[in-house]
Amino acid sequence: MYVDYTIELTTAGPNMMAVNWLILMLFPCVHPAPNIILFIADDLGYGDLGCYGNTSVRTPQIDSLARDGVKMTQHLTAASTCTPSRSAFLTGRYPVRTGMAATGLMRVNTWPYSSCGLPSSEITFAEQTKKAGYLNGYIGKWHLGLHKDRIGDFEHHPLKQGFDYFYGTIGTNLDDFGYETKVITNQRPYWYGELFTIWAVTAVALWSLLRSKYIGTVMFIVLITLWTVPIICVYLLFENFTLLSSFVHRNFELVEQPIRLAGLSQRLVNEGVEFMQNATVARQPFLLVMSWIHMHVAIKTAKQFEGRSQFGRYGDALEELDWSVGAILKALEQLGHGDNTLIYFTSDNGGHLEIGTDGGYNGFLKGGKTHGAPDGGIRVPGIVKWPSVLPRGKVTDEPTSLMDIYNLVSTAVGVNLPSDREIDGEDILPLLKGDVSVSPREFMFHYCGNRLEAARYRPKGGSKTWKLVTHEPNLIPGSKLCQFVCSCNFNIHLATPKLYDMTSDPGETTPIDSNSKLYRDITPIIQNAIYNHKNSIKPVESQFTWAKLAPKLTWQPCCNGHFPFNCECIDPKYSENFTL
Ligand SMILES: *[C@@H]1O[C@H](CO)[C@@H](O)[C@H](O)[C@H]1NC(C)=O
Image (cartoon, rainbow, N blue to C red; front, side, top):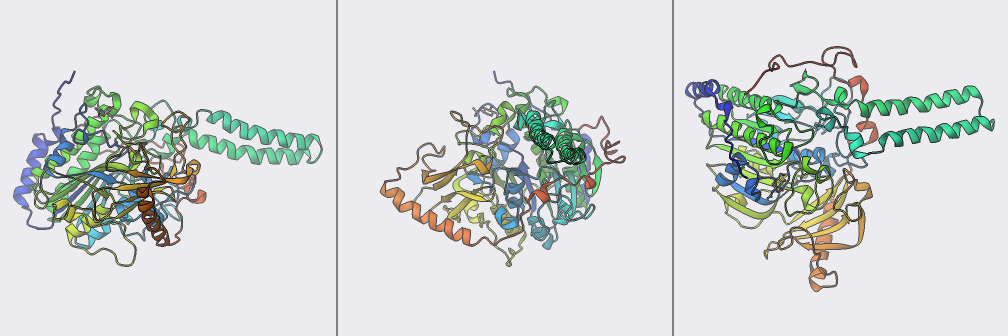
């Protein structure tokens, strides 16, 4: 049964509305420069939205963007996990060019106070709009690092990457922050046993050395201690994610610890609206990134969204996400910026299939988050609305990339692309406008970590898009899933690459016969492009070494005391009963 709850956009309640009208009257926007709002959801699947064919969820606000703008049906991220995908989004560059491609088991920046992060030498789209005098705000999940060399240098913080205002989480959301379960035991069900076995095997070996008099008692005690301490540290690290990684910053200041997930969407909306008001008062054009915490687990919504959907807490969060987008749009209208604002909506990667009903739905696509090259992990919703420039209700099936938004933003604000580095984004404005009908991008490369595992080819002529796949995820036999996440290291190299016709087979079900003329015609063209692309990659310092990824406990943020004591606080701006 479809029950239509209409959720009031209470952000636009009397107070906020009055404020916005007052601002509009006192500070009419005179600048012709467009404002820019970039919405990026976390782990939202390709099939999760009404405007992408889902008939049983309610996403009217996001759907309105597609109705009033251009919907891209073949829109691709540069990675199937958050950290690298977001780095590519911000810089318009493949993660392998910026050191943000994972090299090992850890594929995201797990501990926010590690030294891994987006190098400040990269030129983000915020640094581009800065050149045009924009006020830049980043609200929500960052996940691209904090400090680099010492505590307090904030080298990887949003304010060092071109943003003027930041409110949100430096790290990612995790099961531990909201559920009774732990992300480590979800990933590795036998984690405690594994850890104990690793300890015990070595302990037994040392014991036998002692017994056979290769080492003395003192040596034995020293060695066993040296071995036990790191094991206990690893245990404590993974056991205490909430204490260690759950916090909210406003600019450089730690304001909330641990994160109160219920109501966070409302706080993000409030911060976004205030930012737009401030920019309007300052008569400055603005760039606002709303990087939602939804749909990543742990999923918690404000009370009024609990139990509203037919899809459990995931569906509730989806409705809250949609409401949040709507609240920002409404405030934007009230501030008089409706027509001259470039609005973009996307997700950082596909839905996380391994976690079942708490993960997203990727529709007819194969695979999901962490899988590497299959489209389910990298093909995401992508909508651009810009009423004064773009047609309404247009749909393009041409391949485009999140990295293209870098170029789009640069063009919109009239700033040239950096000339001292390779930019992988393409100019899709003519395609969005409908001036051309073919993607400017002939080839696109799909990575798992730092390994290229597939490439996409959209010949200038013809009407088809091809995908050549060289590696596949190592799925549990008889299943379409990995154990919690896929690891690039275990992905399988295909002796004969598989070629798919993505136009008639978007689910990658039936590879083209490798003995066919078609295969022999298309494959070498793609292989040649891969060769050229690989040659264009210059070696760069990796941000994903163990040394960089390791948590630096002396950098641990603790808002009220001395770590690990009293690390709890509530932002005075948002008391317990703050609601929108
Ligand atoms: C719509 O999305 C929900 C939530 O992810 C999913 O469970 C459901 O299968 C989707 N339904 C359709 C018809 O696409």
